Every structure is written in structure tokens, then in C-alpha cells.
Amino acid sequence: MKYLVCLASTWLLLGCQGFGGAGTLGGGYLYKYDCTRGELQNCLENIKIKNSAYNVPKNWEDFNDWSAGGFDFLNGITYFLNESQYQKKEMYYVTLVQNDYYDTVYTKPSLVALRSVFNVVDGKPRWLHLHDLNKTNKDRVELRFQQEILSKIKSASCSCKLIEIEKDED
Image (cartoon, rainbow, N blue to C red; front, side, top):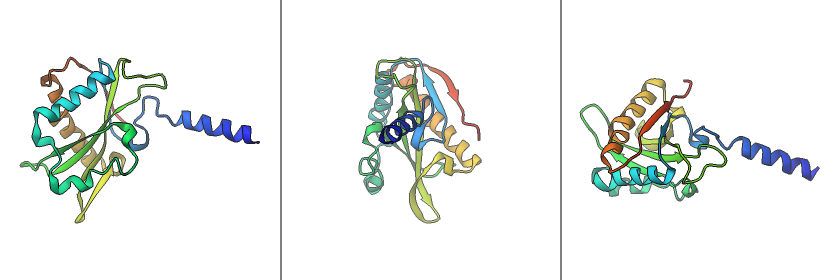
């Protein structure tokens, strides 16, 4: 019996690995790039280095608590997006997504996804998964992510090229 429970648990664990999906924090688009995960991670980090406006401000640092929540293994990057004429202040939690079970930092192509968005909802500051947003808000967030973050990959001394955007079925 223990063998069957162990076998079933292993099957569920591997089956929920998210092969090509966004996993636990899913709900957003997957952006596929023709480069390794290590190269894409460097590109995404360089965007923050070259654009200090994306650094989380001191008064929002307490909300950038992914490590405390046990999400260190995702090696995520948090971007702060300031208020603009048509947009509100938000933080975006972005991670690279494992392409398949055998994916390594040296495997091509690489996937990146916007996992969660932070803003004030009904007067309460909180992180929301993209599947928690209505379609209009989700589309707005994805478009802003594309325009304000991903578009800068080209100018971040990066050789990664966007191959495809895998949209969810909402």
C-alpha cells in the first residue's frame, strides 16, 4: 500500500510540474525566447540594473515578501511600475518557467511569465495571481508587462529573441 501511495504521489508531483505551463502561480501568458534560461535571467536582471525606476521603493519593500513565502526556488524578479497617466502603481513578480522536466539553465528555448501583480484593491495592498483578475484587467497587465519590461530586452545588451507568446485560454 505504501508503494502505491508513493507511486501516486510521485506521479501527481511530476504531472503537476507544469510542463510548459506556468505552475502554481499560473494564469498568465508564457513568453518563449530563443536563448538559455541563464541568458534570459541576465537580461531580465539587467533591465532593473539599467532602469533603477523598476526597483521596489522602500515603502513597498515589506510587500515584496516572496522569500518569506517560500518562493525562493523560483528565482523571481520583482519590478516596480510607477504611476503613469493611464496606469496605477504596481509590482510585477516575474519568473522563468521550466520548459520541461529535463530543462536546465543551458536549455533553449526559455520561457518567462508574469506570475503575480501587486496593487491596492479596495483599499488593501495585496498580490493577485493573474487568474484572479478579470479579462480586461489581465489583458491590461499583460500588455503593460510587454511594453514596459519585455520590450526592453532588446536594449539590455541581450541576444534573446522572442519566438512566441503562448496565451492562456481565458
